[in-house]
Amino acid sequence: MTRATLLLTSLALFACSTGDEPGDSSSNSGVTTATVGTDPSTTDDSTTTTGTSTGPTPTTSDGTTTGDPTSTSTTTTTGSTTDEPTGTTGPICDPGQANCVCDGDACADGLECVDGICVPAVACDGDLGEPDDTEANAQDLGEITDDDDITVMADGVLSGAGDVDWYTYHGLDTFGHVAEPTVKVTSSASVRVCQFIECDQGGAVGTEITCPEGTQTALSGALRPGCCGGATFTVSDFNCSGSSDDIQVYVRLDKPTQDECVEYGLVSHN
Image (cartoon, rainbow, N blue to C red; front, side, top):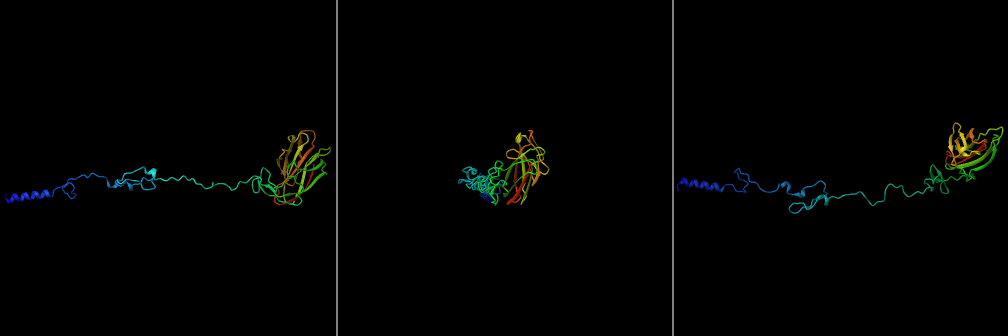
């Protein structure tokens, strides 16, 4: 073998020893070798969150999910509690009892109905006419004619803002006079005064009233027509369905402007 042949053989052997190896990443041969595997960014499922899980997603050792993460790791709060119900106003308040709503217009003993609430009644000396706080229990002042010189009188006390006093008298229609029921009240504080009229002939339904200026049309609990106003007024325009103007007059005093003992004097004529 010549020197030249020996040199060529040596170079060939050197080239083979430095050739491409399948796993040699430093090869400059220009041939790309594909590696079968998984994208490193997706191989660790345990670091991936779904946005609805409140804890780690269970995985096996190979990174695969063992269950539905949304069904095993999500905690739901319903908002229900075992606390006492809210929105109540406290213990039940029975109508007619102290500081409770009135039972209709009535309250338990020792209480009075003021603006729809039962409050302790004002005790006043001189309020001896009770019970006169209902239309049916009105104090009867007797009978008078329509002669204005003949009057009926009464003195009393309104025991606070919730008290009501009723009076009644019978008025006769006589020849030569005109029936004009009139009331005049003097009191230690302003009160409301009402007159209700019922004709003997025709009853309440047969009685027509035109209230004077400064008063308001009213209807009593017994459906008698009337007028309410200040301390003094006259009902001069009323008509009975029959031929007689004999009437029963009811006078009511209530709503004093002061919640205190209000003394008053009443004078009425027909």
